[in-house]
Length: 192
Image (cartoon, rainbow, N blue to C red; front, side, top):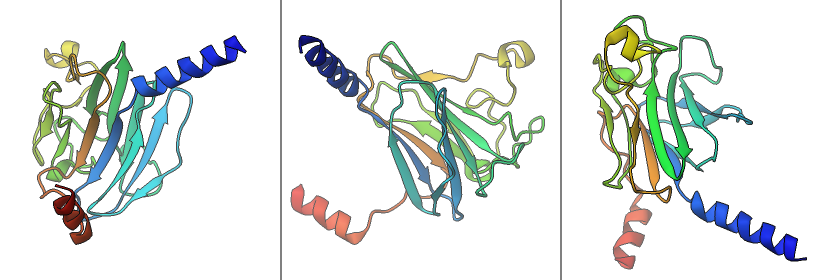
C-alpha cells in the first residue's frame, strides 16, 4: 500500500513539475496541419484553421511540431518547431532544414509572413524571423551552423523559469495577433 501511495505522489509531482503548454498560433490566412512528434509518440495530422490555435501540455521528451499546408507530411514542405525539457529547463528552436534551399525558405510554411517562438515569461529568449528573411541566428537553415556557417546554434531557453509557462509558436507572426471573441473579451472585462 505504501508503495502505491509513493507512486501516486511521484506521479502527481511529475505532473505538477511539467505544467506548461505548447501553443501553436496560426496567424496565417490559410489552414495548417500540425504533427506533434516525440521520442515515443506521434499524433496524426491536427487541423488548425486560419486565425486559430492549437494547444497541448508539455511532453517530458523532446517534441517537434511539424507544420504543413496540407494534411500530408511531404518531404521538403514542412516547418519544424522543437522544444525539449532538460533538468526543469525549457529549450526551443525553429528548424527550416527540411524545406530550405540555401538561403531561400519560401517553401517553408509560414516563413513568408514570419515565424516566432517564445513565452510571455520574461526569463525566456525569443525567436523572431521576419517574413521572407534569411535569419540563421534565429532558425536552423543548416543542420550544423557552427561548422557550416560559423554561427552559434539557434537554440533558446528559459533560464530559471521552470516549466510552468506557456511556449507560443507563431506561424505568420508578422500578421496581427488572433483576436478573442466578443464573449471572451466580455468575460475578461467582467472578471477583471
